[in-house]
Amino acid sequence: MKKLAFLLLVASSSCFAAEPSAEKQAELRTMLKNTCSSCHGVDLKGAIGPALKPETLGSKDDAMLMDTIYNGRKGTMMSSWKASMNKEEIAWLVGILKSGK
Ligand code: HEC
View 1 (spheres, rainbow, N blue to C red):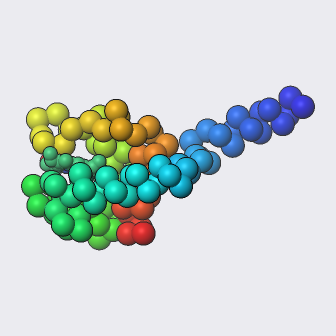
View 2: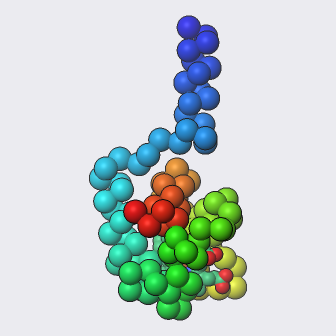
View 3: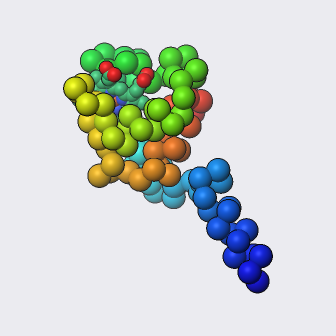
């Protein structure tokens, strides 16, 4: 039993982060389209903020991108989104941005 509890703990930590619920995924996709795009451009191709496309994000570090969304970037228009999404949801978002899916 102890072993099982340990496995569950390992499974629920960052490397096997659970995906957000279908409802939250839909909400985040809508947010990308309606909110993030106000700075990152139509279809996230870049405007005030840089393009958020696989071609531009592909080589960038996940942790850095996640930190940018979670904490924002001081001195730029990119603000923190931690009130709208948790780290797990941000990890999922970075995944779909990088894969373009
Ligand atoms: C008010 C304008 C604005 C909004 C809204 C905005 N961003 Fe940004 N974002 C920026 C700017 C400007 C930068 C570039 C900051 C810099 O100069 O380093 C940026 C940078 C980023 C980066 C880093 C890109 C890279 O190549 O390093 C990511 C990822 C990102 N934004 C995601 C998002 C997401 C996801 C949303 C919606 C939840 C969002 N942004 C909403 C303005 C915005």
